[in-house]
Image 1 (cartoon, rainbow, N blue to C red):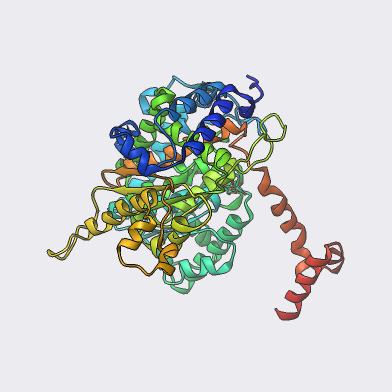
Image 2 (cartoon, rainbow, N blue to C red):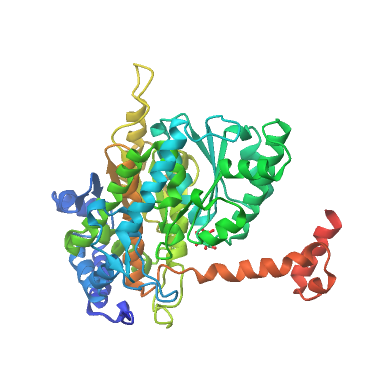
Length: 563
Ligand code: F6P
């Protein structure tokens, strides 16, 4: 089914109404202190529940009536149609002519037979592959799967990059307390040889299993690292006397120590990995939307199939919420629409994501690919230029570390930076010392920061503390700096699934308003191609060098002179 051209959001009546609303708020004066004083129900009206997450939007630069305008905009850009098209497998990734079905990766087994796309029973294929991944995970966890010398696997090394790395490593870090089989994981992504060297330096090859993850199985970084890892493995095993130099011994070792995840199973086999040890996925899963497919095999091994199923359930519950909740109360859609509000009306350039949970320390990095590879576009899905700014920069670090680094700029800088604060009521590591509840001290910061950003501190309040007049301006906090508090119960596999699905759908919502195909990534291609062309010029091919621009020639000359 062909998709309609995007609606130009900037030409809709809802956009005009939002412009007027923005002007009205400015002339009234955007003032969260006043808005809170004037409306004792403000927090109640702007709070939401989805899955087991609680959302407080009341410290944002919106009024309850703004939500009606957001909902109107969503309807006028036909967000409901696009959501339905995504869930049902229409080829909304039209520049690659692909369906976008990551939501099918987490549909329950009983949905088999209910989603047939391009002749494929999608949920059946998903569940069949998951069962194979789970069987493999159980074998590794139980010790039934051993290395070539009969030892139990203790370390998984995942080799992948982009979506084949960022999701798995983020979730691995997030769920570390759930590792329950004495197996740990490491993630190698960078083609910089330092990455693989550091990640393998102290490993015993006899107890190490590599999972090579690449959707295309053509990615230079991943295939290069996989070859290097294979050489490392075989050399080390031979040094330790675990194998001999015969071809059969070496290929048996590769079989026992390498598995792969890819959509290109023929290429996996050509690499030398036993097809029985390869798990597939499909071209309707974008790399950055794939952690809940076989791409998460390392997670199924470390945390076990049961936890992986809980993880999928978290995604699915947010999917169902997003698909079925009216836009007026649909907090997932509202967060996307509010991002548009900040980017296109307030001129925000970036968006901070600040998890108050150390285990989520890779979450902002993961979100950078999800959001910026998806919505960093300047043409719409019909090839015409976008009609507004798109694709804000997502960034962040865990609190409280960020507080002692960059929060200064969020509190007192000249830029408006909307921020998502994410915290959980319970911790996996309760306090050791009976005299202090460290988790409560930590949460006090989560509460305090959004309060300070919203309500600030006036010159009168600063003076009342006896501050010398010359220093008063430096100590004033203007407030009115928007934050959303996302509060969960505990950082469980379920909650991590919810959080990922939440941001996936925020991306779709923003992308739909901007008319963007959020599922292609043509912008990464040119650099890859040029790297291939430049490679021969670096060390030997002077003719290839001569074809480079003057800056590149000079840089390569520097390299040749100093290597
Ligand atoms: O170059 C960008 C990209 O294609 C990402 O979209 C993707 O996640 C990453 O490379 C890795 O690709 P693959 O899984 O095919 O190795």
